[in-house]
Image (cartoon, rainbow over all chains, first blue to last red; front, top):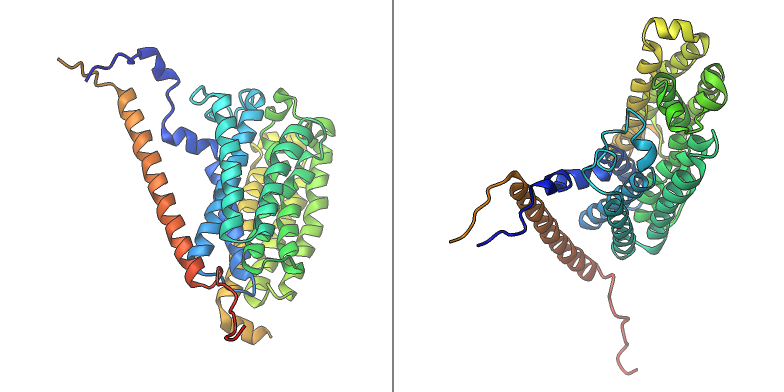
Length: 312
Length: 53
């Protein structure tokens, strides 16, 4: 065998499989898989395990595709921000064109396969979610308005609705309650991040609330969104996807979340600088557990028929 | 005589090719399983034609 194609300088641009996988934002995919699975299992109609597995896989691939397209479009600002500088495109492991091709190919594949494995409505919702995340959020809102996170958060809120539609073939109030939970959770989650990732968004020219309205206003916004979120989250306990387990989880976590948001609102930059944004960082960490635990509780309610019986 | 350039880049390519191969294999198995479930589940059942019609 001869190997005349061997060129040492290619090593810089030859990506591994892991680099392509990283394009798909695996951590976001985890959240998408989990919330879509909860939507599917919380639905009143059961799905064959093979169909359920395949459908959730295609939703995950669709989410990964939108992540790759986001990395293609945002390669310029990702390179400026500390948090995103090591992503495959700004790090020079994968070219922006490769990310674009992979994103478009996987988008088409995932939507088409979801239509075949589940139903057309679920596939249409997945296509809309990809469109919303890539075009509405990444291309339009992100660099234009400080409300980018508020409206763009809808993209991350669709997976449980898609999961529900995979099972039932239609939408209902419960599916939109799960949507609303993620939709209302997204702004305080990202604004807490923006508070302690001080210079990132400013350097990249992304009009986050911290950049356009100042940090004091951002602190007030965190609290202003956390209050209705808490009401919604606790109120969901009294719907058909809620129950005693969910209520207990929601009461504890929302009390902690409200306390965290209140503490953030009470602080100023001098206090935050002094302790290295301790409160903001712990609020951000709590927000991750918050969403996981709420959806975990919805799942528990769906999988524990005994709990249904007591509550009903 | 063959030239064997044992380089990290070849390992990376091999890893990538094996990974893509396994994913394609998995995809084929998944489609097979989906087809089986859909057909046996009655998703593609032909409408019954009553005798005498």
